[in-house]
Length: 117
Image 1: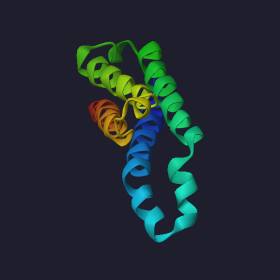
Image 2 (image 1 turned 180 degrees about the vertical axis):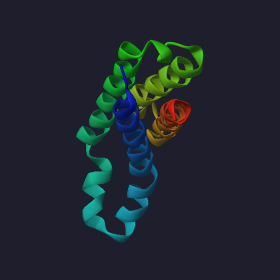
Image 3 (image 1 turned 180 degrees about the horizontal axis):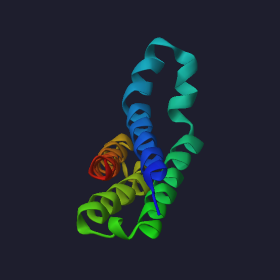
């Protein structure tokens, strides 16, 4: 079964998460109406849910994804993105784990996409 569209969705979602974490706060300084979008908790949860379901779907549907070269970066990325939902309470900037996690997820899915072409 082809998981190309799921890999694409996961890669785009990961890149959107990275842009949300890095660019949106900077834009919110110049355009205050974006501040609400930069801080909206539901957006963080939506990115985490997308990461879990898209990456989990690839692992579940594609036996070729059940290798260390995909599972290790994708699993670490999911752990960091989901962990990012909870680190603010202990004084860690939420952008640090989510950006690293988003990069790992994007890397894992883009690498799978490039291998399949």
